[in-house]
Image 1 (cartoon, rainbow, N blue to C red):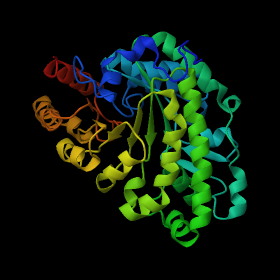
Image 2 (cartoon, helix red, strand yellow):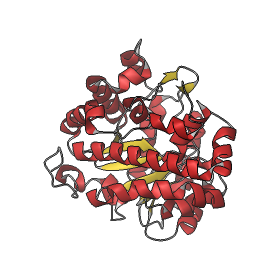
Image 3 (cartoon, rainbow, N blue to C red):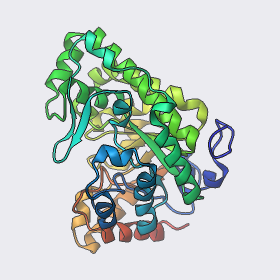
Image 4 (cartoon, helix red, strand yellow):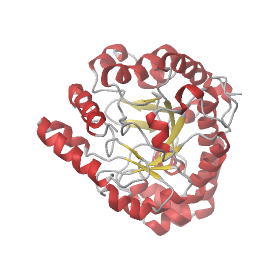
Length: 355
């Protein structure tokens, strides 16, 4: 049984008929559902207030704080889904990897993984390691009612990039050097990360998440042949591991226009598309049997409302013949975005697509 009282493998009944989950299942919807990556975060003054003086990783481990931050954009914007507030490195921290999220830098790993001996840092993740996640999701589902909660995790390639580089990178020279130069070590690293990621997603689903999203934020740095050979097997393993739960699985990366077909092949039910590829072209690349998510350029929100609406119409028109469409930005909400622009965007999409 899942934490919401539904048998494992079935959707929670309270959220099953939501517009978001219907779109993920490619069923008719009352309106195009909307949610935003990074909808809970620095663009909201209430977020900055509640996070004041609290380090990022600590805030991810406090169920009361996670609950409040996750709910903030739902209250403010009337989005069709909440996304669990966390960070992709949380499961790594939970198993004892020595890392921290440094303001203005991002995740920094004290001992980067550069050799087979370094793999010893990566033990299996257990539900007890992230008991605060289970507690927070229980609190959230009670508050959200019929609004679905999206769980999420970082994909093995993106996690590996941080672990091998020791922090953010623009070139991924150390990660790619391992991928090309020691493919067996690379494969073992990604396989271990796939197990950790799958375990983290299972905890979220069993606690009550109605869908999950796998963020492969840096996969756009790869050529398709390298992705197929060196990344696809691990991502596929993650999606297979949670398939039996029956919740929609979303796959998203940035700069992945050339990888869209492969990302769908990895096992996602919904493929996220950034702003670089129109959705009608994206559906051709992904192929049939998948819903799409996206894909307004986040910077459009800094333009006047008329321009925002015009660009939004372009996205909706490109999505007109899709089997399923979840409206989102083509990447995360930028920190300096006016929150009111997001609220207006949700209302506009809901009104224009009302059926």
